[in-house]
Length: 161
Image (cartoon, rainbow, N blue to C red; front, top):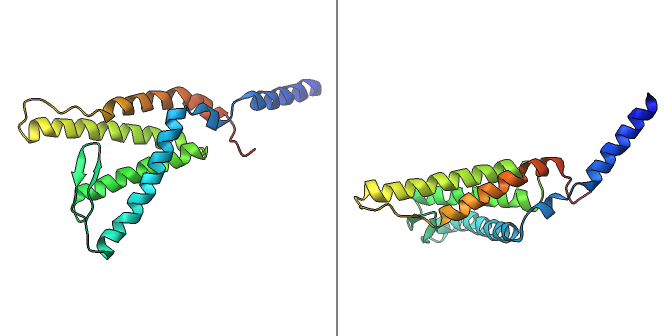
């Protein structure tokens, strides 16, 4: 009886060793965009206080939300979106346990914002055709990829072991 539990423990250890590292689950394009958004999140978070210190404004834009007024709600929303994207990118690149949840939230919020911006262009501005955001295609692909690797991510080990 004791031999069976030792064998089961050794099989569990072997199974853990055979699982891929989390970083290998990420495709090359996911890594590239994660680095880009991590860098952009750092820039966005650093530039916002500088806008007030230097008494200047910068154009900020993401998912069709655009602003150049440092005190507007849209500017804060864009910066919050960049912070969310940067958090998800950090989690994915550094193999954090919470990275999948952050990435899924990031993708879902991005899709909702893109749909809202398109609907607002159609109904709020009186346009006859809704504007189509190209980002929407990439966000759906991102969401599908994260959903595919989520079960393996939870089982896999980090690269620091």
